[in-house]
Amino acid sequence: MKTHKKPVLVVAGFAAAVVALLIPEVVDAQAGRMHRATRRRTAVVVSSATHARDQQAMASQQAATTQQAAAQQTTAEQQSATAAEQSATAAQQSATAEQQSATAQQQAAAAAALAPPLAIGTVVHTLPAGCVATPVGGVQYNHCGNDYYRAVFQGNDLVYVTTEPPQ
Image: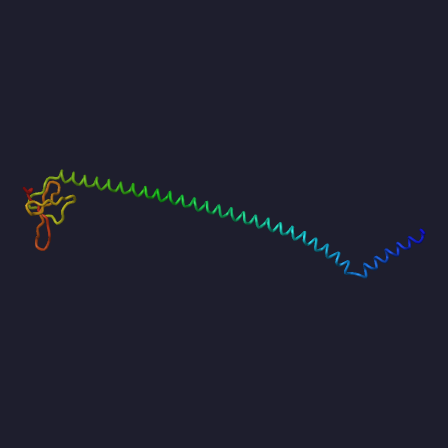
């Protein structure tokens, strides 16, 4: 019996090989399943890699948006500080201009007070700075320092003549 088993095994192995060769659908089907399984695993890996890349890109975009918002906030704060500085500078310049104007008026008044009065009847075409209108008895006089002026016409021109202080 030993002799019969060996040739039967050889014949059975040969028959299985012939069947496998004669039925290519079986071989293709087995290869296809392996190929599909490999493709599925690859697809899962690619999908995971794509998902990780998308999440990384989204996180990068969010970080850029946050950084841009912070930069805009900083710019707004700098502009606000600059505006406040400019406002303070303008206020300081205004106060300085008012002080200079007051000083100039005081100097003009002091110079007029120190100057001797003009002779009565002196004609001027414009009044000096700092004159104060003073109506007396229905007549308008202008008091400028030590002098009093009265408006009169000289031909077609309006001029001012020095007068005695009104009583």
